[in-house]
Amino acid sequence: MFKKVLIANRGEIALRIVRALREMGVQSLVVYSEVDATTLAVREADEAVKIGPPPSAQSYLSMPAVLAAAVSRGADALHAGYGFLAENAEFARAVIHNGLAWIGPTPEVIELMGDKSAARQTMQQCGVPTIPGSAGTIHNLDEAVSFANLVGYPVLIKASAGGGGRGMREVFSPGELEAAFNSARSEALASFGNGDVYLEKLVARPRHIEIQVLADTHGNALHLWERDCSIQRRHQKLLEEAPSPALSPELREQMGEAALAAVRATGYVNAGTVEFLLDEEGNFYFMEMNTRIQVEHPVTEQITLTDLVKEQIGIAAGEPISFLDRAPFSPQGHAIEMRINAEDFEKSFMPSPGTITALEWPGGPGVRVDSHLYVGYTVPPHYDSLVAKLIVWGATRSEALARARRALAELRIEGIKTTVGFHQKLLDIEAFVKGEARTDFLEKYL
Image 1 (cartoon, rainbow, N blue to C red):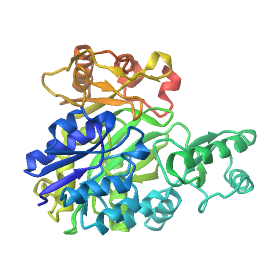
Image 2: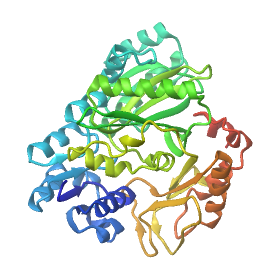
Image 3: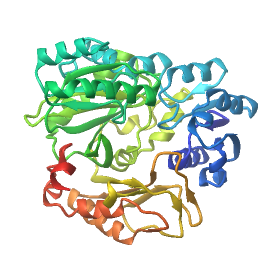
């Protein structure tokens, strides 16, 4: 096992990794920007190194600064969490080149699955259903017009090198294509340093279903069932649940096997997520693979009684998956994660940085909070607005919903605006209670 792991991230995920390492008896080394000097991750880590000013490009995205901290402090492995450098193949190679273990899949797999058009071609070759799409990068507007005319509108423009909804545009008619194409390329270039895009047929009113996978260096690979991530705003997830209320046992098994086919086809090792779109007829299509831990991993942990971060670290250290003696197993109960963002949802989810003046976390059976907040902490304006994840578990979906309502009522955060009120409204919508959410749910009901 490793002796010291550098955590190249911030906020709740950095704290989450610090806690996992402490339980494993491994030293933690956190890097931080000037504005993050007082975060809980910095406080709780065994060591912490300041690497730059607040802008991400000069701190958390600065590969030389992160690597210098790792080498100078004697780290023997690096965990990048999610976001920032977590899916950067160049960074993963540099980590390995400097003699550290990379806690994640190989740089080659990150590169392959990070190129969305190449990933789709790989899935086609191994028999995983894919959405009709362009053969590769669309280089100009004429190519985009030709493809859209071939498959018919609506179409979806997607960045080849990224995710999270950035560089993505829906196009419903020929007159919208040019502006959407230029806008998607510009946003992709600004977000990922790569303006390449590809096109695919737009699946109308899908559910967003993702399968958690784990694979180790001993040839073991398994899936840990699905998460339903259909509650989204502008392709950004707001609430996730596991298992999905939409899947039959047969469909669940089919999607799990498709995810494992992706693992085998790519030689994937460590934790990853294979994302699918599920249409209204029950057909599913590969969307992308995230080569890292997901924000919503806690709902999978709750229904499988696992610790995915510990598994990531163990696999990177050469250990087999720790719970093979329990696999395969069925999902236990139902879990829901509500993302608490520093945003004013009544003002179009406008960011709301500021200082926390009062804070009370909910408790009781089946309630978990992953957060880096404390009274007196100032939420900076420089980073993602996620400040907490409220996770609830129940023996049934109905019990999980009841606990979610109760936990939200107990939660008190003052000093900033948050999305707590949004979740309270969402949980009272009859269609959501019935499990009928699709990716257009917010536009339809809120």
